[in-house]
Length: 322
Figure 1: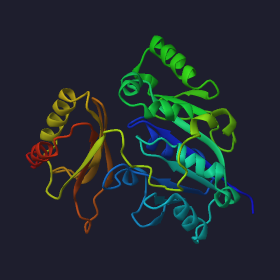
Figure 2: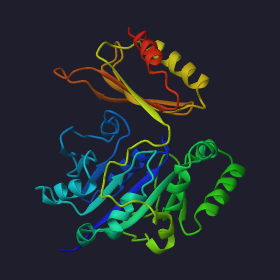
Figure 3: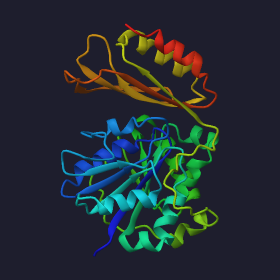
């Protein structure tokens, strides 16, 4: 049996990992992907952001790809995928934004059972050109994500000037001189071929993995960075104007401590769900699919940051009901 190639997608919160995942699925339409998603938080919001996903243990996308959550040990999840009735020929793993993926890579490098079935193709790190300086100052994990990747996708270049780009390129090269650096906007790939390159060379970055405990655990969302998360749910419609004004003020006043806000919104008078994404003070709201007649219309918002006063935030959010 030929080994299944594995591509690991890493990068700090809000760098564009889920967008890249969707772009890869669209670009390589001939592939039969299996996707492992890991979400930092009580509930998986990103699985809703990946198009056409359903919410079972292993769910099938409309294009024939399959997806599952990394809510058990990595070894167990991989075995479930292999033993499932689904046929796939490439594995994508999207790590959570605060994960050092070293233990995941170590499993594919050193575990004989995993190595017999899977082969690392590449480790892609997305870097948010707009926020990389502040993210690096606050969180050491981004340095690790850059250091152990073989491909760096320098993303959101539409938000910075040429001088800033040159500065970031020099910064990345100091942290990783072996990686290929690809410039990108909106996590788009252009003509670059990211899959089946087998560009991952353990010897180039092996010293970054040494010392990492290889426990075969897939739960790499454990938080030892002081970062907290909270999940807000509301089954009553929210007021569109109120939530827009509150979110803008909330992010402006807390831009040093709030890293990420994302969610699915049920807005009064709107037939479609609204997909909310924000990174630092940047806010993006897009129209998702329509709510079906028998579906529970519920807003779910995940907030990730430091020093979260969850009681006050939840009270503020409840005040946004229509």
